[in-house]
Length: 301
Image 1 (cartoon, rainbow, N blue to C red):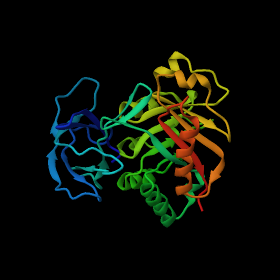
Image 2 (image 1 turned 120 degrees about the horizontal axis):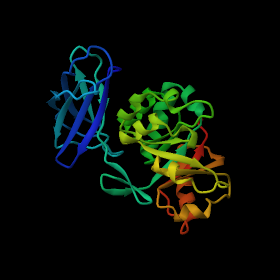
Image 3 (image 1 turned 60 degrees about the vertical axis):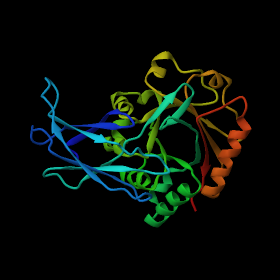
Image 4 (image 1 turned 60 degrees about the horizontal axis):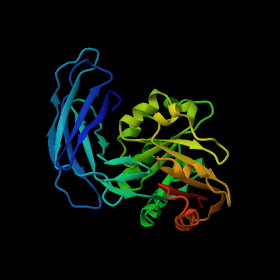
């Protein structure tokens, strides 16, 4: 699906609008159908929603739109997805609708405050076998855990989307812009809630992720001063990495932005242990800090 960009526009309880822009190939309006919802944890009857061509706009590529009636939104409990099938274009592209927003110092999913808790995995996870990856995601689902994962392959994000495992993708790099570390199709994955970046990576690609519902999380350390106004304007939340026994800087408690705490150093031996440690981290930082997410490093066996 390299010749199209899916944009989720207006989303309400009763309808959701999908915009489809052509990014390559023939300069004609996209034609096809959106079908869904699909979810392995619920019985649903998929419906077809045909794409309708939009009037041409100067300087914009040919586009089409479809309105989904009574949309099913992605949540970890019920990870509903839809399927875009364009004429002459195979295979179909899965994507999801998700109502995920930053509201003050918290995140909301489908109108309810959501605190993410779970594990931060190392980059070695990408070298694990298919069975090990499947077990990681199954255990994360069983323990209601979210995952922080460094520059995950698109296939992993798609699998997490089907399984209902929320992801915070860590895109930090000292030498590469985000455009070189993540495929644009990442925005189509329902599981990808947020992306961690450095201040130097706050570029147009990050802005594109943000416009398409991926919250941008700016990393900081215990020793850092508060970010400047320009950096805060281009992100939705902050993430602070803590070594053993470290606490976040006091200014984070006063920041009107969601904050994730990621405990490094003493890695938990299992996903279940990491989830329990994340709960304990939340308790240890209360009441001074009431954060939007708590993660503890895990060692994959």
